Length: 182
Image (tube, rainbow, N blue to C red):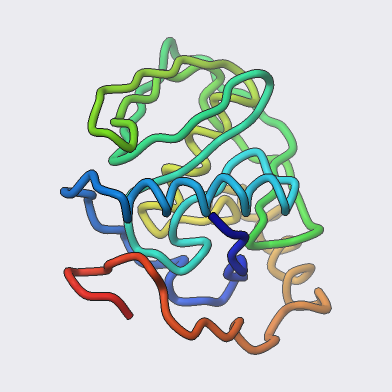
């Protein structure tokens, strides 16, 4: 278990759809542990595997008393009500904007042992489930902002001291991608 470097806005891995997990083994359990350790070290509410450079459909979360992970997650809204509220992202550090999300959702997936998991949440928990699942589809929360806010957000991102800095040096991922370790 170790803390991994978080990939930042502009890294292509954040814009790629992650691959379904098909093998529930020790490598997957290590990935979940790395995600959890990194999420806690960075002070995040959730963290998706692409954010540490691993293109697999896995995320961890720890927010408002709900903690765990989902593998190959899906979610569906409960009711029609939306919420508009502050959202941030470890891959866009130090910045945040109001983003519209569903108020109440049910997330479904599997745990690291292949057992089914269901988590239902409102407000921040619901926001986290939607945000992290978006990461697995190559979608960032800035893509969900209204046009005016998105324009402001992109200007702030381009002005951020971290924007455009070289990618972190990752010698090799211990997690298989597409059947091989890179």
